[in-house]
Length: 417
Ligand code: AMP
View 1 (cartoon, protein in one colour):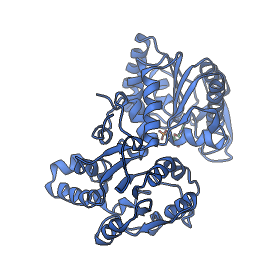
View 2 (cartoon, rainbow, N blue to C red; view 1 turned 45 degrees about the vertical axis):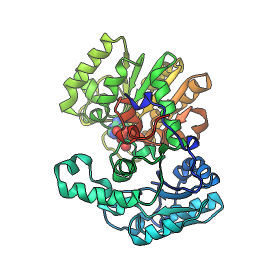
View 3 (cartoon, rainbow, N blue to C red; view 1 turned 90 degrees about the horizontal axis):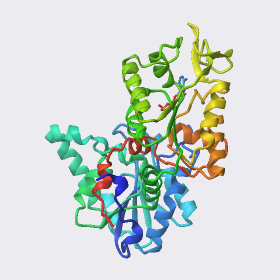
């Protein structure tokens, strides 16, 4: 059964009073060079679940990853600033533990009183956290190492809560092995994951039409699975960003120096044929903002149709902006994943900004819109349009895999209603 078809138990369905609750959250917050948190959005999003557990008399042990320390302690990726910020937000002390496992962590967890909260240090300071299950299956030593690490975490608590949607598509020890080892104890989801599953699940199961998908970003290869899964479900797929050029080259257009995945040209054409058979309209850009050099302040111009040699498409052009916006305007359901240009370097963010605005306007007119995390979420936030879209997913990769129809094994093992 697909995750989106299952109703999972949440923290509201269980009694946590007097229990030690181990909660996997996503405190992978952005920080500046001096380790100041530049956006506490991810901490804010976890608050409803955290507050519910504390108010219900649970003793809460939080665990998360931050960045990619690759199994090594790295002070720049310490979760200490997150503990401080969470304390401020909760108005109560959050005890910070400098390791996520070990005797000291165990002792602190045991002495944690009901209604108290502690945060463990970055899980990824231990390489065992990210050992893939496939590798563990093939190598007994790796399996043992991952199991031992996970067992130490599992031993800390009586209840497991998963509220880390951003890593829901991964088989990290804290996401999968820990709840496996806690079989027999309550294992539930938090309110953030509940919301994500509800929005993403409903949109795929019961979309009001027209249902429009907007896909952008760098690589076709990353989005092939999504396109394949959506062809039968949506009425229209709008394709922008670098990935459009693999499709356009397949259609015989000259694309100059634009990014192109030559190995995927044939697959791209097959997908276009499949879409035509399924009566799913595919919209590609008819013009492009092109430049000789990808850097700020460089001269750029519009190319209609073919792109001259030496030039690279860095954004959709004005006609494409108009056409895309029109195709979004009448939508009743929208999913958007990936920028339609190099939005990090203005003015090549023009297309992405226009798409964000078109999605917001369609939402004002009654559409349900889901922004699939990552760069498209950043664009919507940068424009201050968060309140004019229905849902911004906290997991770019996870929401993409959800739209691909993939199963999340770490969620499948959690308790069902
Ligand atoms: P993804 O992670 O696949 O969603 O890709 C996001 C990246 O795609 C962003 O860093 C954009 O700068 C990049 N991108 C979007 N459009 C283009 C383009 N036309 N040429 C090069 N990179 C692009």
